Image (tube, rainbow, N blue to C red; front, side):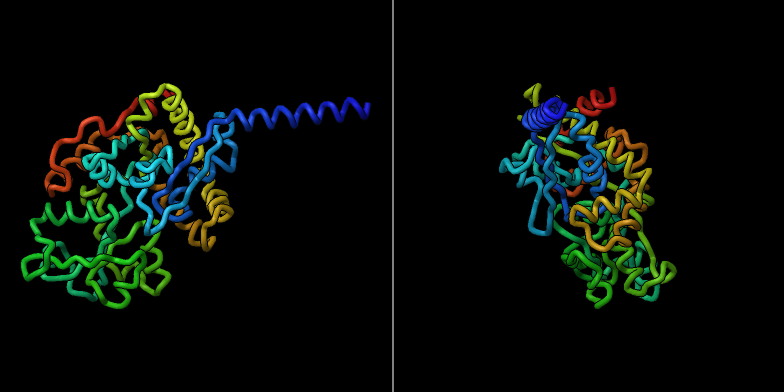
Length: 323
């Protein structure tokens, strides 16, 4: 009997080893550091959703010096999380990235100003300093200023753009009259710094109809021509959206999983996950064409791209993933 049990255990271990060897490897490059902004991917890995699809997924955190488009162009990732504006800009420059899924249906970007400051409405922007991050995050801001007809080189008839640090210090230290924040991150840093919601004037990009697509999944067009790679991406997207749906329905647990993968400040991650859940919508991963058209038009209008993009997104992956 003992020999039989040992034999069974050895067989099970051999099967597990074989399955591990057979799993298709996928490297995912995040846009930023490990936080609840990316909870769906960490949940999918932790809960075994990727494993169920025969995938061995490595999740690489981002940072201020990491551009996902450059990483995938250099072969350092199979799929990346980035904003559509940055992806379209990179595509025109020769990096053939294609949107294969769009977990985020709404944008989280906002501009906030202290209520006791000089800015109350968009009409007050002239002659003032507004902060925004760069590395591809500035495109929605510039599209908005272009829509308002405001030059961004400074002067009394335009705005001065502060290349903002990835925190809220420019507002606290009064380096800018308004700064950019995400609904799920820096906004709450301001609250933690002592500001009350009633102390702030908030310009929400989505509410104003100025939102451009954020946090989509992108792969290289050249690799998608390979049926085996396309199938791998179908499985990856299906498992990722399962992870996102689980994260939305179990936000505190999702935040704890993020903490286990390098997230900082559990309370902040839980609050972030609650706000991110509002942006995921129905969690099917399908791209909204109207939002894509708005994003492309905004980039064309401000000459960030010079021609109408073609082939920059596909529904093939999400259609197959949903089936």
